[in-house]
Length: 274
Image (cartoon, rainbow, N blue to C red; front, side):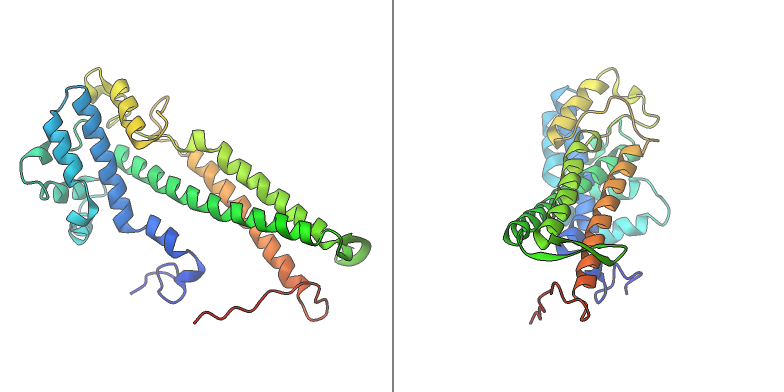
């Protein structure tokens, strides 16, 4: 049973695509946690903290399809940390390598990295779709650059413009958001590994090097300092998404207004999917 319209099999399509739902699914979230645990193990093996054999085993079994997600969910009745995952993960091993998972890390290290890895996938999808929208606006602008229409101020006819001029404004607005999406990447795609209170004390003097190796493995930037209590970069990203939503909403509203029977200057095609 759906708990919200977003989860609804009927209305959910209005809020997210299949691709975006997959990115933020329980399966993918769990996989990103496991990817983080495996990268940590590989970094520790390179520094001699755990053996290469242990790291190989951890990497081998770090697959969400090997775990019982329902059992992990049951664990969250008594814990809001990464512990439910670890308990189920350890059952997947055919030796004692599970005892070396999560060595010196804290729950937020794993969850924060998992979130950033999910956001990175979502960012790529949003960028792809917005790039296509930009290209489409450019194409329309070129095609209709000489198609005259009424310019309006306060919805009243003013000097004439062209439809291509209007859509070129849309294109530039989208282009600015594409630039924002690119500019935020160095601040947004930053990993996390710093231990319970953010000091790396549990890593016995090898924390910064372990951090560097782990982030290189995950393709994330190394943090200057722990960001456990900081969420400004995520808030910044949400702000960029809000700007994008505002732009696309404005364009959709303008198309809706211009295709009214009384105006009928533009028209959307009617698509019926079988």
